Image (cartoon, rainbow, N blue to C red; front, side, top):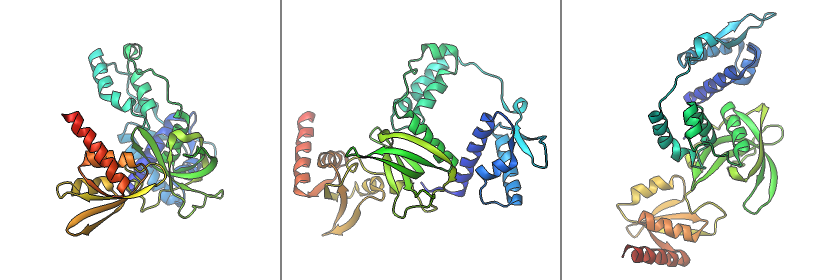
Amino acid sequence: MKITKDDERARRICSLALAFMNASAPIPSSDIARDFYPGLSADSFRRAFSRDRTVLAACGVVVRERPHPGDESSWSVDEASSYPDGAEIGAMEAAVLEIACQPLIEDPSFPLAGELRFALAKLTRAFAEASPLRAARREDARPLAALRDALTEGRAARISYRDARGRESERLVAPYAFFGLRGELYLVAGRLRDDGSVVEGGTRTYRVDRMNRACIVNDLPVSTPPDFSVDDWRRLPFQMGETTAVARLELPDDREGDVRRAAGANGTFFSLGGRTIWEVEVSSIADAASWAVAEGVIPIGPAELVEEWRHVLEGVTVDAS
């Protein structure tokens, strides 16, 4: 998914709302301009901030100018106009919410699972006491929270990462997007030098549960490349890990469209003797064989993939009988 100007504005407005709702004192205009409108002139900042305040008000967060010593303005939330009175929901509504949200809460690839769990538990006292959603947060909650804040606020993050071989390293990264795969959460991020410059070709995919620590670097703003799309970084189930082989799969006519959509930017499609062939990197032969059976495609190489595919297919046939 490419990040558009509308996406950037939505992200900025969400960040503004969080900043104002969490502020213990009015925020000076200079701080707002520095943190949320970097690079804009004074006039452009005032116009953009005025437009964003209108959107915030429509969302129920009314921001007003406050008296401030000196010439600089400061701003804070008008609590009387912003926050509605509390509301209670009944046991039936609570049960419906629990059932509807349970899959997300139990999905380790959903980055807001912990926050959703605690938000649901706070809806009503009865729900909080009766609900089974009070389980402990995942071990990766702290790194995830820091990464999510860095992504939302457009800031760099410093991470301590353990790769698949168990090697640990410290890295300065620019978070671009999250995606989930097979119950795991991944972050796509660009590598940064200590001065904040981007390392060319340094964009990588990181498994969040392999991060021992992560912290936001507030004084280092970053931006997502204009041509970035998270779809270019998604991997198929058999591609997580180091590449061990290059598979060639024949696509039946009735499966070509679905496979192309699932493949995204992975692999190369070409015609051979009237057949459509997909050539793609593979990390796990067993996973690739299982995926091929499930998707109805036919491996034609390498030999070990074809053999494994036959074993999986035979197993499926026996189970069906």
